[in-house]
Image 1 (tube, rainbow over the protein chains, first blue to last red):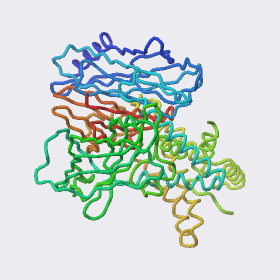
Image 2 (image 1 turned 30 degrees about the horizontal axis):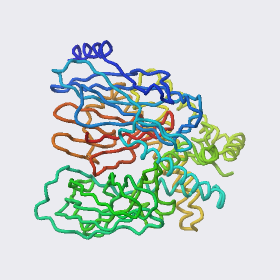
Image 3 (image 1 turned 90 degrees about the horizontal axis):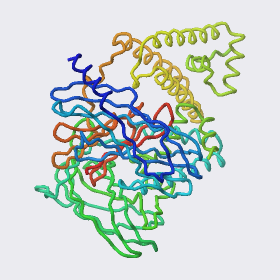
Image 4 (image 1 turned 30 degrees about the vertical axis):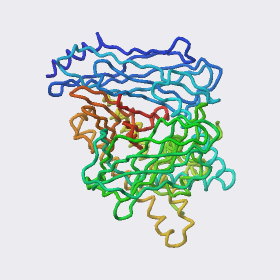
Length: 361
Length: 202
């Protein structure tokens, strides 16, 4: 077995490769790319190939770069899915180089050609003025813009706490964030994409959270449930804004028969709505929900809240800073990726490092 | 003379206390042979551990510096929490004395586990033989299965598949998109970058 592994590993280095494709007019260039530590492990009739790549990219634009999204694929293991690696909350100056690490595990049949080619393509890059470059095949523009808008909101919120109430208040806020991250209830969510109706399902209570200054309002939700299975049949919205809406993302909360609430994921939907017009989506999926110990969760009700709105002009709306606290959502849904990054800086390097980071941008 | 706690001395031994606290600890150690001796012991243990670990080639997922950073981050956080909890009156004040000792005990236990585990297991941890953790997010579309857990996100279809693994820390956040996607985010301890990995049904 080890001999075959060694032979396969040798074949890996000889035939395999990492192909990085950036458009010729890209504001980023690839300084270096390659496979780092890689190995293959036979498993039954297949090989597991671990590939650790590190790209070094350079910002050739005149603007500071805030986020990047890369599409990762391999023809040999095209399994009907697409994958992306995104790095938001960056602050890369013009001319500066930065790393992006991709750690891949490929599962290949023994009967294959034995060669592996991993393709990495630029899907999008976001700059400090929220301008975007890239083919946007995976909807990176909306996601990178939303992450950046959330990051600015959360940094502003923490700076305000520091300015008004001082270092101790900031420290307490960060400790609260870390405590909530550890105590947030988790559900095992299994989604089956199928239009088939759930047998013996009954309508459940649905609602939308009241949100201030909401550009898109939820006006109708129809969902059915049987035991721990949930199916959303229809969601209807009205655009209250003057701008045309391109897509929305709805956060979903479920309540069990004992009144406990859990986050059940989100529903991003392409939904074109002219100003003041209405639109609806009919998701063709059913969700099975279990507690982490494997206990089925009996779904009693469903609540939705709008967590992103993308307008046709590329602008993105996210809820204001206090919304999660006011709606008591903070104990159920995680904060932004920037909150995650800043809380990790605080946890690993202390309050002074966090203050330096907040003052840096 | 009030002695420093083990947790504070452990941080002081690597110069990891806040500036004023570090100064206080250093001044105290000049006068207090007992605390000075404990700081020296921490430094010697750390050096011995580094020497032992450096002689092996560690897998990327198990770097000693990261484990050490993680332990000290937890001690620092324990001290911060105990400082914040000082405001809560006498009852809370009593528990305040407990926290640094708990943190110290936790660190001692963790160090013992890591050290023993490392020397027993050797450099090859055979991580791929460990049972997979319970799925947190799972999407099925025909024969295509997307999956997200603490190791990352992946897609599998009839024996072939691909998984985007977290670079150096477990996923702390998972999200299922009801359109057919699984997303996780994790922080790379080397660069401090948040990496968001996402898999979609094609």
